[in-house]
Length: 287
Image 1 (cartoon, rainbow, N blue to C red):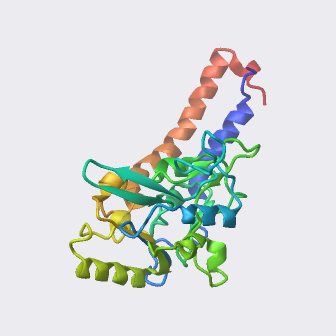
Image 2 (image 1 turned 90 degrees about the horizontal axis):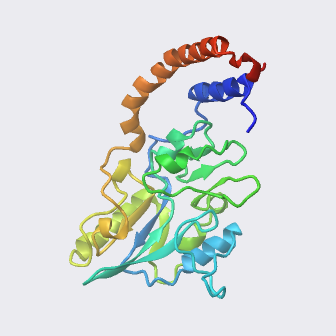
């Protein structure tokens, strides 16, 4: 392996330090969410047909992920080509289908964590992604509490891929493709306030049918995708993450880390330069 040049080293260090100062661009976190578009998924109505998965694939032109026989589209988890799918939970006395997709958090950790704002929370509700801004750091994959963003490892120029809540369809007055294709009404879309009212009505009128909680109402500060279930949410992969937005939890750490970087970074680089001169590394780190 050829030695890294000092110029390349400083370029990378400069990117890391400079990213802290890239200005926010049209972030909507913290805005009134009542008119934002969202979806309500009712697991008690889902039959596991995966019509939503097929609708998403057709609209977004993603690649089929076939089963070992090569005959059927049978994704087993979210991927760069599968942005939503139905998974099955089977317990000893109960079972449930559960839809996996981006939750479109009201205060998204992925948006907060992205150093170049390739991810944006729009005022309409969706969390969108701009591949032209992305530098491939994959930090959104690390910060997302729901493990949603995926990386297209097989592409020549890899990008992040995830559900966009069909932001392009919403712009034309249509709903998300998955919600409009659902044959049983397990998935509906609309204004978040209306969806919450519908979910609360179902809980009130059918209390013996559901766990008494609307997942996403307040979880991690609230999400645009809401869930009702007859099985405890942690059993179907929706853990209790508290009600504090993930970015809020990281603010105190950032108040310490960023100043430390700003002060310690130049000192570290100066120390490296001093050591390189002393040990004769200058020749292998040409400018």
